[in-house]
Amino acid sequence: MKFNRLHPWCVDYKKAVQIQDTLRDLLILKKTTGKICTIAGADVSYDKHSDRFFAGVVVFTFGKQLEKIEESTAVGKAGFPYIPGLLSFREAPILLKAFKKLRNNPDVILFDGQGIAHPRYFGLASHMGLILDTPSIGCAKSRLVGEYRCVKNIAGEYSKLFYKNKVVGAVLRTKANTNPIFVSPGHKADLPFAIRIALKTCRGYRIPEPIRHAHLLVNKVRRKLAIHVPAAPVNEQYN
DNA sequence: GCGACAG
DNA sequence: ATCTTGTCGC
Image 1 (tube, chains in turn blue, green, yellow):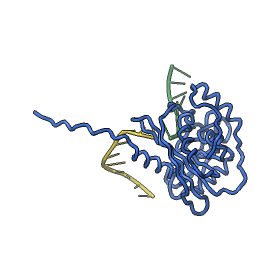
Image 2: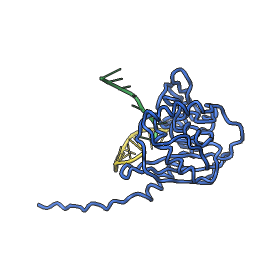
Image 3: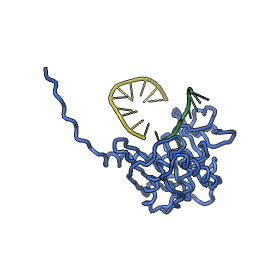
Image 4: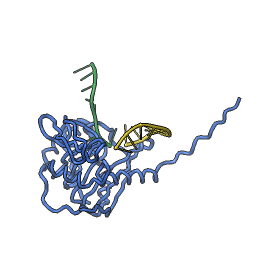
């Protein structure tokens, strides 16, 4: 799939913040009209020993049945440290490498990170959605910013996530007796749409299927490509 | 200065 | 994210 190069990735932290403040104003926070036929999930795994990333994208048909129709992976070195609020500068380059190999153009993409529930309203899902010019939704497993009331322990229940007096997302219970996930619009999406899509793609697990399968995929690739260091000889104890 | 802090 | 075994609960 094609995407726009909006800026270089090799920037300093201050420049990264400026880029976020600029690109944020390009986001469209309204649901895009049109039927959704395919939906993708993306995830990244990190190997600290080789300082490498394993990225994966899985595309599903969207309907009563979710059917896997394509998957794509990429491997590469990490080029930016993890800094809360700047995650996209760390993970987007390797994710884009995987998206570039994708033959399908998914109608919606789910990311394992925040959308606009971010200090500058521009999390990973927003950044990726903008570059790929595709509706995107952030589905994070924990909170970055914002306050919320506890969510009823019933699948489908949610609480609005407030940040600086604005609703930036929802804390969504995708399954009973399980911690909720943090859903927020990325690009070309509004909150009701984000919540609806996240819930419709859950199949008995806490994490929506597209992201869950992308996670399984990157771990599979990681095991396969792991650099096997020869086992250290076992030193027998004498005396 | 202190605490918080997606992956 | 990663390091990691067993274990408690629906």
